[in-house]
Image (cartoon, rainbow, N blue to C red; front, side):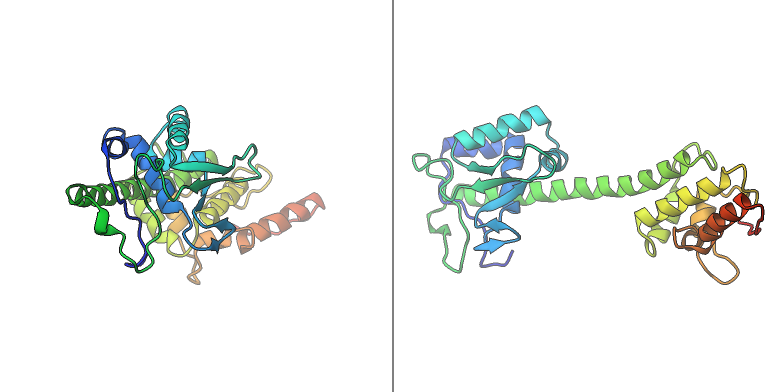
Length: 264
């Protein structure tokens, strides 16, 4: 968001301050909605002041349970912060929330809107301006840090678990060397591609009728190994890779009484 575009709070009475300082979960949910809201005339299917809402996304990013989140949304709606444009009842449609321009009702005096070059700060109570600014900044930073940490952990676990589930070589735990190997491989391949290669290798390795892929690599060896021509192992075990295509071809030939050996 540019310097000329921001959300500013014009008055903070006792009730409004409670949203930010007395109920941190409620504050984080409201902040999530504010930062996800579209402030253009129309963008990505959203009208001005609308945002797409996902219970699971808010639960994960704000670390709040479903029941608590439902209570918070009900309170924000009753207090005049938000209204529902559409409440999804299925996975095929998305919920949309409208962020009310003159939130918390005119009687409580909380105003926020899009800044378009005209200062809205002249009526902000100086005693709370910096506090709110810092609180918003810190919360967004903390939430972002948690999400980054969670995503990093997920990428390692998803690949490690895929390896274990493929029944190749049973590693007892995810190690630092595995994480380094995964990081190196992710520079060239996506998580989905690495998992695809692992599953295909697992299928070939565990196929009792296919005797030409019986070498048991470790996870590190498999994702880092290159052949004599410098081609990455992961590449060869993708659905379009030479090893996996030869495996499919050999299975077909075996079914017809012939074979074409191609060792892993």
